Image (cartoon, rainbow over all chains, first blue to last red; front, side, top):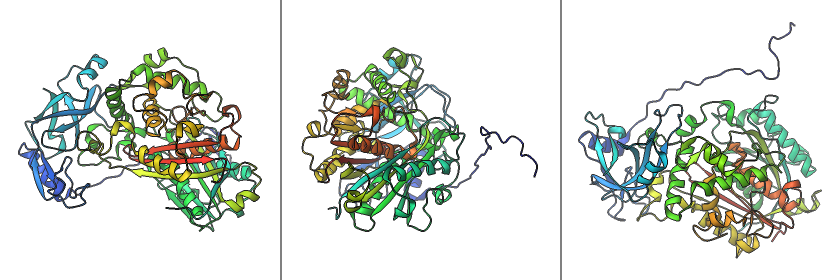
Length: 156
Length: 398
């Protein structure tokens, strides 16, 4: 048996996974995405608990009853948590960018999205403007494709 | 739930933790921890009735569902074996599964073991991004860094904590890690150095974030009769375990309508209350000597100390700066091991917390030992800040 080449303990064998998917959207997300196409953000509503959910759910997690209606979210809301990303991550947008959980008017829960149109050069100063309690508005993309990325937030 | 039988930790094994273990494969690493724990317990593989395997996303190590690969290396063949995965809380949940195996009366002796190699891929944060909902959240740059930055920003806003307070956590954690032979990051640092490290995701800077660690850990759990006969004069008794799970949607945990608070790590309010009740702990600040806290980010320590009942809301940063969590007569010795901030082999991190807490109770923590430690708590958090596990260990079987 001949000597195996490159058998030093520091050796590595490279690998890569490539896996493809088609994610079924389902009825609830489908209705939400249809709303986005028409420039509306629809929250699922449970008449038993009175809660409205974004992202929408099939069932209310408080009453354990099915969500039985839809509520249109307001065009403004309040930041509940935010961060400004200044490092590059594989598969994510080039930095800098800001993201925030925003509780839109008429909705009980907060939904994550980008906050655009804000100067991020001075990170601590920008973070100050994104503190919980800051008001934001929803801005829709001109061309919508029925995806959650059809809108973003901007400071009011 | 009432335990049918008392359970003790009688053996602990850890490899050193570092970026790469070029000399061992993933399963050989798990085997090293297994052998060390069995040796520490004075047992052989024949003494083990069942195995719990602690492994979170297997994409880090790059072998799908690597528990299958590991079976022979950890002496799992011929006995029941299950894998547990609750993300960052995996080790805590695996420990609790092992505990339940014995407390229920089904098995006498259980090996809980796992390994991780987080730096085997450069795409770690991409893998972590994939845990979120495809339709609503994944597009918005969530990963463990940005998720925890969101909670930290909210915590700062609610309680007035500053970036410098978090930097101080790094300084003290490194100082403690220097006494831990297995710790990954041990170099001394300063608040100034942490503040000057590159910004990643407000308020996190590079030095506020744990390393990507490789290594393995194992514990041997057994029932009281076996523990009394074991070579361990001072086992670490499992006085109480509890866990709480939250929705994947962090946006459900903020604002007027929420019954939980994202910034507070308040899964531990319920989990700790339950674990303390089972352990007979009434006043944790007085009764618990050591807390091995799951803190992969410097912002994790304060909300957990508060939710675990060691101080009031918003008080931890100030008390921490005064040294109240360093032992030496303070409120509680937090992370004498240096904690997760200095060592994070994700799939076993929760198990390392419990193992390091057990060593404190056994009086075998070496240079990390907190004198007279009789009660310890170990925590872990996983998923979308979602799975919370809490384990109370003591020198008495209760």
